Length: 82
Image 1 (spheres, rainbow, N blue to C red):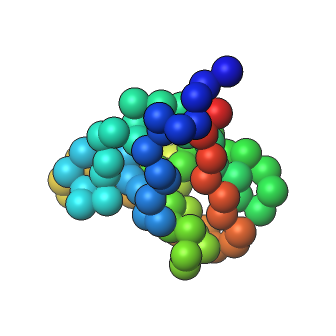
Image 2 (cartoon, rainbow, N blue to C red):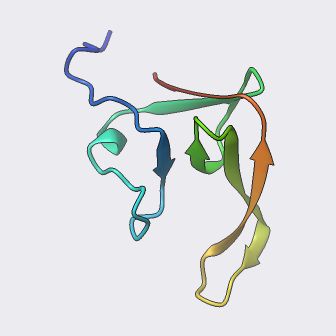
């Protein structure tokens, strides 16, 4: 069992993209889980708890910079450490 006192607090907004201003390297040292509308999702690229949305990849489509195109889904978002 992990000790929750040593875990950094989960931010309101978090992205897996290292070039994003919402990327937090300390948080990604631990396993993170995301529940969207009471179902755990494993394909989340970015989330925002206060605004209630997640962003997921739109298939294999890439933008002009070579990054995956993202779709924003709105609903109930919960983030937690596994």
